[in-house]
Length: 176
Image 1 (cartoon, rainbow, N blue to C red):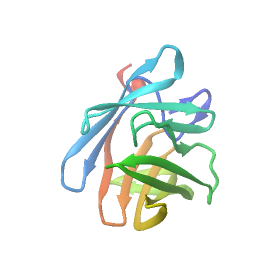
Image 2 (cartoon, rainbow, N blue to C red; image 1 turned 90 degrees about the vertical axis):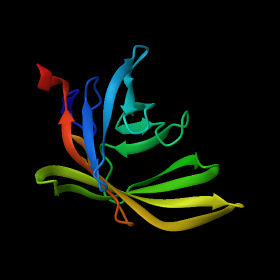
Image 3 (cartoon, one colour; image 1 turned 90 degrees about the horizontal axis):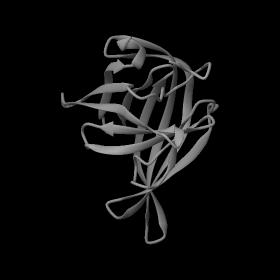
Image 4 (tube, rainbow, N blue to C red; image 1 turned 180 degrees about the horizontal axis):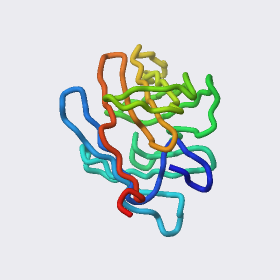
């Protein structure tokens, strides 16, 4: 999808939706349900699995969200990030200070997901860490996020073998 004349990694527009299949056979949907009338670049995304609203906003080339912790905004993705670019997502999970160290590993690759081939894919790897008693602890747990330009998140995999794959997507122009 092209927004503002530029093909983006995460199309944010009311009516956009993505359906994912988990490794266990269950599925869930992320749907852009509303736009903030006071901030036209801020959207509400609803996740059918968690049944909660999440803020998604485009700030320049960055996509920011509170999906990791309500009210805490973090950068999730960057449209123009080069390979090797890193940033941190900081949030509380189960009362613990958690950190995801995001690193762009690939840009412009081709990825097959559930029999469909996607081009212009960016892969970002997240390394999970915890802060306990003032010490940063590496968990040796990694998550890979694959984003296809014009589509959005197409697959998530982890070092533990978990997988969530895109099986359908809905864009507003599909209904026209």
